[in-house]
Length: 229
Length: 304
Image 1 (cartoon, chains in turn blue, yellow):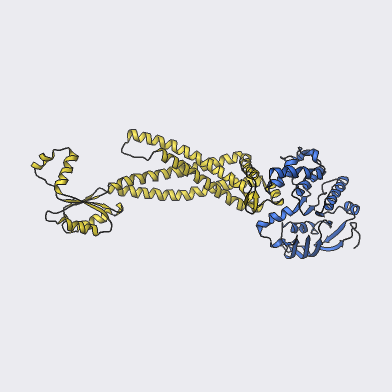
Image 2 (image 1 turned 135 degrees about the horizontal axis):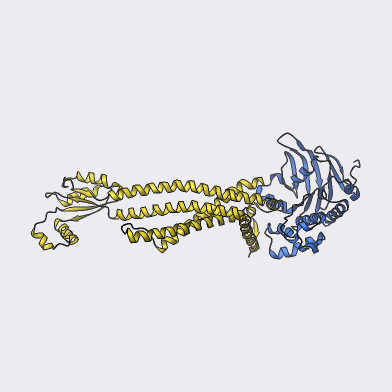
């Protein structure tokens, strides 16, 4: 589903963000990308949703070399790859329902489709009863669930989560990660960048550890934050 | 019924969504949009007033042109057919009309209200003559000089005469006004583009969060751009409509005043002209608004 082959990213100032990364993630997998700040976690995710292109190597998503996608096809890639951020990125003047529907609005979905898909997405993240609330009236965990619902409403093949629990307390963080793991069970590949040791240790899923842009560990059979490969 | 646009199926809901977004954008930056509309109105008012002026000068010049002819008197021994052939050989000549001295006298009598028979008694002082219509009124002076040289044409001071001086001046003024209008179109047009562009730039800045989300959830570029284009077009349309109303009201009063006090000035004024002027101005406003918005979107969306 997602394959990185010899991927390097070097910024114009000479900083190496990723260094010859090889990584394969299959459909329906749940993968943690861990590592200290600045290790290249966010860059790796950005390559997958074509926010940036590699200096070297190939990034294949669903068989397509995303770096070679013409600009007009990037939106089509992003409909296949949902993204969730630490800072939520919700529209404060729109209700939960409207925030989720927004993802369907912009892809030209029909009214019927919106009425069918939004409740399913909200149900999936456990926010069906908050449909008419505004983001400011929600807790951090609930806000992040809205983001997940928005990312899922277009039925993406993969869901990328960049430090989604960064602003949440441990209990809520675990709940949210379990929700993402459940989503992976339905066949959606989930890649979650985090440096939350507690969650990684508790979930015992595949862990890819980055250090200075290089993959230093890939615990395919699952493991904790600091386990040795 | 869904339609295919840019590889995406477009529902009527989507069109509604885009129009709504454009309108909301305009409302969100209400004061700024109002300032832009007023600026566009001023620019378009000046511009359209110049266009009206050029239009009227053209109209007046055209009317003068229609009556711009060269009168060529012949000598008593001239053979009219030879002179006519010589005149018609010149490519600048559109047509000629022969006026015998008797006919010329009759026309003079008619114009002055004299009795023709009585006038004949005193003798006919008029020579045979040709009336020459040029293809281009600009050529009249040079053409008159050349006609003077033809054998059989009177060499008197007024042997070859024309009343085209006014036409010539009018055409010079009309050309000047047209050039000024073209220069103004460039200047004020650029100003309009900048004004619309700056306003749209602010809207883009205000909506950067929304745009960023749109980009992340897979909105196509045109989908993100259309609301801004609509906003620019609405601004241009509103500004130009305001300008058209202001200029037409002013023009109506000028026309009414001149009709009552300066009847010799013939302004163009008809329902068709008003409709054409208003439609043209508004259309230009929409086009300028769209171009301004397009430029802003290309420039600012990259840095969202």
